[in-house]
Image (cartoon, rainbow, N blue to C red; front, side, top):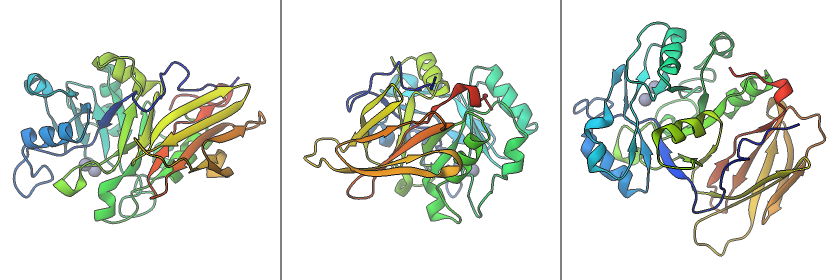
Length: 299
Ligand SMILES: [Zn+2]
Ligand SMILES: [Zn+2]
């Protein structure tokens, strides 16, 4: 009765496309997009990324002009910057209407919307009551690294668990919110897409077939007979022990384990269960939730 968002995905350390969906570039010295787009694309390519978009404030960047030169899938997008911010990705037109109009416009164009840095400056920069009143977004930044150079908290798993506990299926994203070189490669998404086509990438995102990482890879994610088994690891390491946290409704920690993998048996009462894995140096991985579809609707 539960749905495993990874059920059709190939899981393993060599599978998946590394992606950042929040990148400012090319808007001039001293602005958010201080560095040139070409320099930023080259640096993300060097850092092993395969999917990227440039997301400047209320400015859509057409990536088609850069496509030929880089071995990286480039998607159009922008950061909708009326407060509070949102990323509109996979669209070809900018919308500066209300939040709901921007979401509707992006989704109509085949794209997806991510709520940005929900705890920037203060807890609930993105007020939970406002989230209750918008429809059609795909997810939120559960981790925006830039915020640790600014104010507030870069983590927003509290907002995520709030949305999920209300029975609204939103996926967790991790983004650099790149402004300057020190922001590059701090947190990323691994998309378990069957190919490098834009349509496969976007449909994998919409179905939750991706995870968030600050250094760990997902080597196993099995869900059978209500038993969830997860393994994470560093690439090329002899380290075998990782810590696994299973989290359910209202952010409650259902179990914590240390070992080669984490195993949790659902009793059937859980609305959802998501997993966080932690490595020896504090590097982390966040999976999307396994969920009971009877308790959920799309936001
Ligand atoms: Zn922002
Ligand atoms: Zn931004």
